[in-house]
Length: 465
Image 1 (cartoon, rainbow, N blue to C red):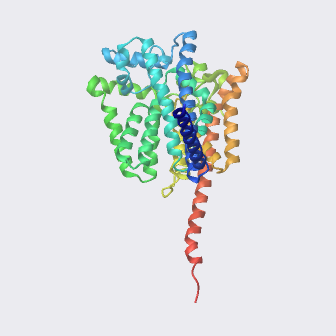
Image 2: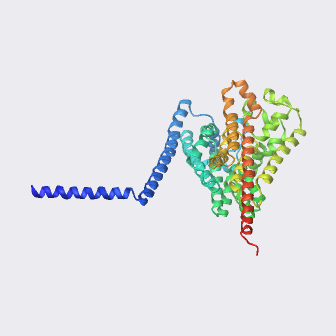
Image 3: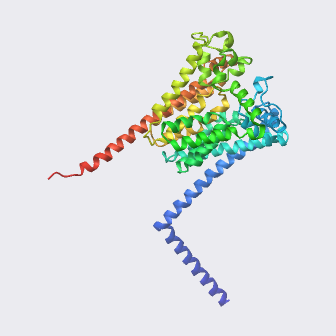
């Protein structure tokens, strides 16, 4: 029994020693720092689990909802058909049904050709997973870029932005649109630009522009900022990727496809024969177009083509309507570039947000799914609120935009149509643009004040003899 008693005593001594060591470690300053580090790690892990849980919820819930509704006749069906036609050598641009007509350049048809190797249902869900992944990639890159100016940008900011834009995000996923993957390329290019990789950044911006035309406003931005290398490489990349389908279709077929595409979309299509071609033959469908082009047309065009869906303030006809539409859009773009993108300004994060708003509003065809382009402006504005930079003004701006986004859904269908005829979503985009522009002015004034103080400080330290 004695050996056993000695063992217990030694065990008790060891336990006491361990307890004393743990007690001393717990109350030391180093342990406090380690505990703080551990708590920070646990918090980050909790946020990571929340993000992964949200990601998994979208992946699981959306297929269930779509299964109950049945696979819709959506935009992905148009891309799939275009890819099938590109792979089998059939004409790309059909004239039979304008609602299902391909409005993307030939490069998109070539990019979707591999999807046509499987059934439409399987291809849809593959594209859905790609879209959801691009969605979270957009939020991740938005936070990384926003942190370069607002250190307060964190996961909470991204979650709030996700909730405020959830209507458009879910519509985009349901439609199977291509905006999110293209926007991911744009944000990836901006991240690389901020990291000093300007050549590869411009190459990706050119690729994104070749797929969807809206990133072309970054070319205007680089020219305004006198970033000649970025502008040149982006232009060259755009030309190369745009001509790439000619290797597959042949030069003659590619030239024909490009001509047909330019006739169907772009400024030429928007201004070619207004307002008849712009609203016919599906007025309720085109009523959903919330671009700045469509807003001006609905406000000022003659009412014959728009029926009950136009406001028709002046009832203008061509060419007066064409001049008005083009003038408003060009002035809006020019004012944003001149006032919101100063040559010597280092407030690039807010300037990127303004260019993203141009990408949203200043192309001829803008549907609800396009409003996912507000992800980055929302992250920037919310990060500024958390950093207490013009917090009240931004809060009012976001509250007003959210009201415009969701209030029409609570109204009867007739009043809902009136809201869309008045371009309610365009108004919300303009409100976000105004908030971002005001934030840019505020940040510039703060930066200028800090530079003046830094310049005056050495002078104040001098003592006169």
